[in-house]
Image (cartoon, rainbow, N blue to C red; front, side, top):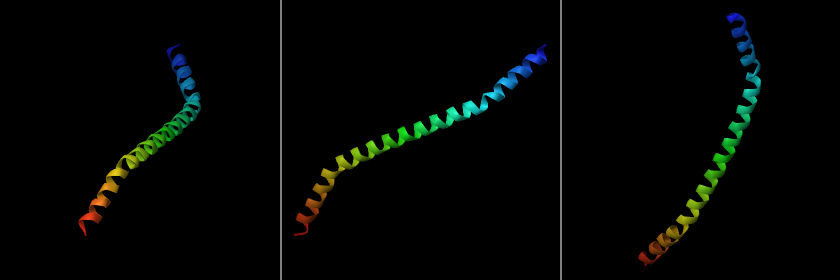
Amino acid sequence: MTILVNNLLIALAVGEIADLSAITRVRNATQRYELLCEYEIFRLQGLWSLEPVHRCHKYIETTSNR
């Protein structure tokens, strides 16, 4: 009886591998998309916040060269 139950559990687990693989692929793609979105937001915020500093640095360079 124990062998029968073990074999049934193994068959059930093997049958679910394809479904789990598909679910994993979808979750992986979703997480990659979310990560790229967060990266783009972070990158754009960084560029936006550094632009005044860059502008000030250029102004200082042009005025100090005179």
